[in-house]
Image (cartoon, rainbow, N blue to C red; front, side, top):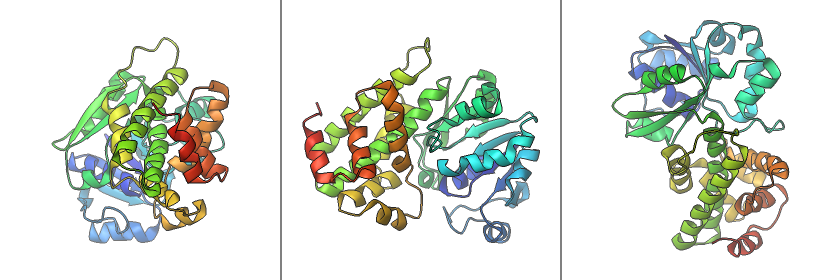
Length: 331
């Protein structure tokens, strides 16, 4: 099997590491020739997870995503959600090839408010059996350090899911298989929004007691939303599983969480544009809060935390005033 990885940020780098550690052949599309040359010559990514060294005997590095779509058996997209459509448009002529498309994108397509599998199905006619999603809880920095982490692989084709999960499993990666392809993706979108909230709360000076109440209520909101958007007739889901509650907890509390860091700056008084400029990585919770707000205009699920975060980030509401109102809605 030949794997393709598109994306040279921290998550794309971590996924390339896992695949190469497991003896797979990998073609990796990175963002510039300078990065490609550095990886080929010095065997590590100069911009992200630079402590990770790669065996380049099984690694082909390129800067054109078409090379990945032309040759790989399983293609992993690990880019910010805002850039996904550009890669998909480039790849349309190659979707007639039989390959798996694996999303490591933790966001909805902006403006479209769609999960990637729904966009591929409705706009390009891609059979959803070819689509999988990889979700955590799994911070790239801990993968780099080979600290035990868990990855959930979700898809509708159980054989394909099992095959991909086994390709990633090793001494520091435990894999879990799921059929809840829509639910795990929406959960990943929501946990980034809630991590913004915990960051805001920290920046505003709230303590651990309030944070615990905030996250507990976030878990309840997530469950309500997932029940509202999940396909009718789907089997009963354990929302305390690692891909739901576990990923929520680590994203809300970890010092590696870019969404928590972004929210912390907002809580301390940074304007949104200033916070975005100070971040070297994309905080997916920012655009996601608008997407979920717009989806929920139709679904009408009770989401007071999401709506509070949306109002602060997109409507300019004062964070301190917004959280003082949110305090009264938590249980």
